[in-house]
Amino acid sequence: MKDKPPSSIVSAPVAERRDEKTVRHGIEKIDSYAWLRAGNWQEVMRDPQTLDQDICQHLLAENAYTDVVLKETKTLQDRLFLEMKGRIKEDDSTVPMPDGPWAYFISYVLGGQHPRYCRAPSEGGEEQVLIDGNVMARGKAYFQLGGVSHSHDHKILAYSADDKGSEYYTLRFRNAETGEDLPDEIPETDGGGVWSADNRWVYYIKRDENHRPRQLFRHLLGTSPAEDILVYDEPDPSFFVSVSETADRQYILLQCGDHQTSEVRLIDSLNPDADVIIVAPRQTEHEYSVDHGNGKLIIRTNSEGAEDFRIVEADIGAPQSEWREIETHRPGRLIMHVEIFREFMMRLERENGLPRLVIREWADGSEHTIEFDEEAYSLGATGGYEFDTHRLRFNYSSMTTPSQIYDYNMSTRERTLRKTQEVPSGHDPSDYVTRRVFATAEDGESIPVSLLYRRTTPLDGSAPLLLYGYGAYGISMPASFSTSRLSLVDRGFI
Image (tube, rainbow, N blue to C red; front, side):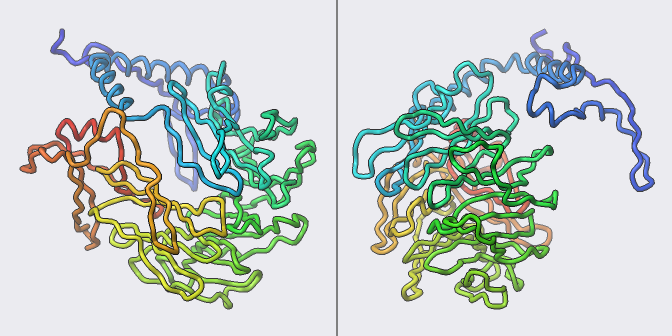
């Protein structure tokens, strides 16, 4: 019996055939398993107990079958789990991000499953736990914290949570000093909240009955959510809506878009009743993003055939014909992200599959690139909370090098290592090799491929290979560090 695979002695559950006929555009289609798609899925998202029992029982049978089939691998599963867990520092924390008198960070505790949002005085002092997800999750079958944002005067927190697994987040408000929650409670949001400059209003997105982020509301702190003001309602069901703020905090950004078209509106952060300004009316296949600083809009755009994007500046309300180019389009060099500061601009771009960070000084237009040594690596950057600063924070990793967080002085070009990802069970990057090669596609395009293997792994074709790729929506896979990947590599995989 031991030599027989479990699947030979256990029957897999077979879904019942219930033919359902539909006719679309004169074409008849028979779907035997349409009954497995819950017709009341919107209700199920809010309350899983409302799932049809026939569907529920079939899913439970599938799970039970999986458990039986994989029973003989249980020892290996447990060993792999302990390996992967041993590479994760459970009581970890992020590097504090300064915002005036306070620096904000996220921490985790040993045995905890949820983050804690904390702060400490920027000049040093006692840490304060603002939101503890572990405390809030007690007694709940499911719990997920959403966004957490502090008011600009650091007095109130807007935070959200989902305790059903529905991805409908309830937005709440907490006094940062006392830890007490205000009575304001807003259901069915997308999880985020953006504060107005005067700390009186919070802008948030509500999801519709089809789970799409569609409506922008603003809430006056201390009033009933029933009185909240609808700022915008997106009429196109293919567009999603999001909200953020500009780097200088002068404007609330209302972003609408699908995968190939953008439209951005500006809301005066100090005057919410002022007219909303459309930066550029939506035009199919025009993608753009906007920021504001030093009295100018900085726009990343693919207009005028700039497939890989260019950067322009514009006055508020100026038509596209008056946009002034400050970074030209260069085919093959994709501008992915822009951060602006009072004296600098940072752009994250990718060429030949490799990312790079470029710093520009507004005063004279001079530029420099932050250099790295490895063949393949991953980069990310954030401007943080402060606009009038010389500090840029970026993170670096490769398939062999754990994540490293740096503070970079854009003026002196000094980089300060603030943190290196700790692997508690141990990790020696010199035991591994990262390589970067190119494969030629059928259409002649060169595809960069990042390789990771142990230094002792034979390269004669005998080693097993796991190949993974993704490329839809302009998204590629960065050559970043992964602790779980090492369990394969340590067993001889490339």
